[in-house]
Each structure stands twice: as structure tokens, then as C-alpha cells.
Image (cartoon, rainbow, N blue to C red; front, side, top):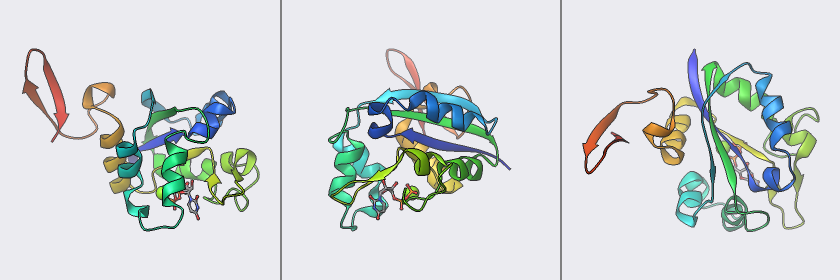
Length: 165
Ligand code: UDP
Ligand code: MG
């Protein structure tokens, strides 16, 4: 099935200069990049992104991690598109816990668990189509993606722009 998925290279990945390595690994999938941007992540964006984990004990540190509180304050967000995009990307990422991840996966090769217990695992990738849709709409405006992935409507102001409907 042709799908799209959200990838984030988290602040540890950017701070450790792993951007090229991660993108090279992801290119093994032969999927297409249809959007990318570098983002300084606000508290609101981080909390919305991880909203389903808000009751977990590690949530405050996870938000600080995504906002760059432990590293540089930037995240690289990308949308990958193509056949079985979600599963193909998740496989190369490896398991959530970097100590349990396949050593040749991105998280297995580059991730770590901090002494505070945060999984600094370099990369985020959506786990299913519903999560991908929610996350892509959270991180990107329609005009920042080179394909029409989801329905949009055009709003008229000084300039016309598209917004997610
Ligand atoms: N995480 C953590 N400790 C845990 C579980 C998760 O620090 O026990 C962090 C980790 O950075 C992970 C993120 O929270 O990537 C989101 O967790 P999720 O269960 O959604 O894992 P993922 O989808 O990233 O594999
Ligand atoms: Mg997840």
C-alpha cells in the first residue's frame, strides 16, 4: 500500500552530526522525500506530538528532549512517501529502547539511555496511517509538501493559502 509517514531526526541526532548517516540509512528504503524542514520545537508542538504519552512518568523529560533541552534546539522533520513506507522506515529505525534495538538499526547503532532514563533514540517514525496523518498535519502546512496527501481548503486573505480541513 502506498503510504506517507512522518520522520523526525531528534535533537541528539542533529547535535551528534548524524543527519547524513540517518538520511543515508533511510534512503535504503528507496522511498521518496516529499517534505522537509528544520524546526525549533515549541512546548506546545512537543506536547501535541507526544500527547498520547502525557501520563507516562518520563513525559516531562521527553518533552524537554524533543525541544532540545538536552542538545541543540532543533529537529529535522521529513515526510517519506511510497510503498509500505511506515513499516519500511520503522524497521530501519529499530526498537524504541536503543539497548534492545537491532545493533544495525539506526537506534541500535546511535541511540543511548541517559542516566535519567530517557531513551535518546535519534529518530521518530509514525507507527500507523492514522498516527502518520495526525503527525504530518501537525508538523507541516499543505504548501510545505510537494504532494496533496490529504484534503485541503483554500482560505482567502491578502494571499491565498491552503489549510488542512
Ligand atoms: N521513551 C522513553 N522511555 C520509555 C518509552 C519511550 O524515553 O520507556 C521515549 C523515546 O524517546 C520514544 C518516545 O518516548 O521514542 C515515544 O515513545 P513510543 O512508545 O511512541 O516509541 P516510538 O514510537 O518512538 O518507538
Ligand atoms: Mg510512537
